Image (cartoon, rainbow, N blue to C red; front, side, top):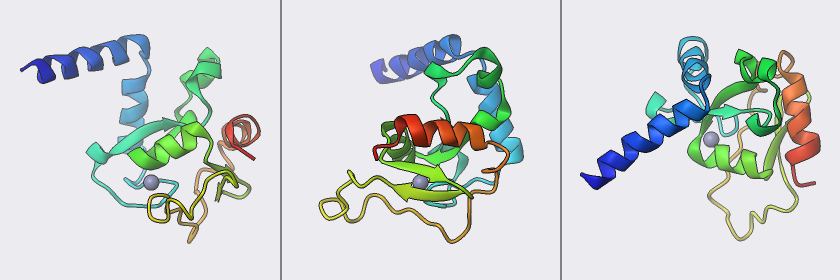
Length: 137
Ligand SMILES: [Zn+2]
């Protein structure tokens, strides 16, 4: 019971402090195929996260409300992206940071570049920001 109350409470806080989040997620559901853009895993919607390509904390109001600032990522890839262990370069190719030790973690970060990220060109400024300011080079 406590867990459920906490879950709803956190959701409410999340949507209150990020008023556009619900709309952006709805946009992805309606317009993007349900797979993670980093590992290309096709997944049920409830396993996919509405991930900011440029961190929301450094985005202005116009950017925060732009549908192009988000895309689908699975939970693991979203963390790798936010922390800067993966990024995306021209023309939509996923790269892994040299700081990420794939010898220690051989199975957890599985990028897939069998095809480029389809919305890369349209949202290049967000990916560029991430590559230059967040990615661990
Ligand atoms: Zn993924």
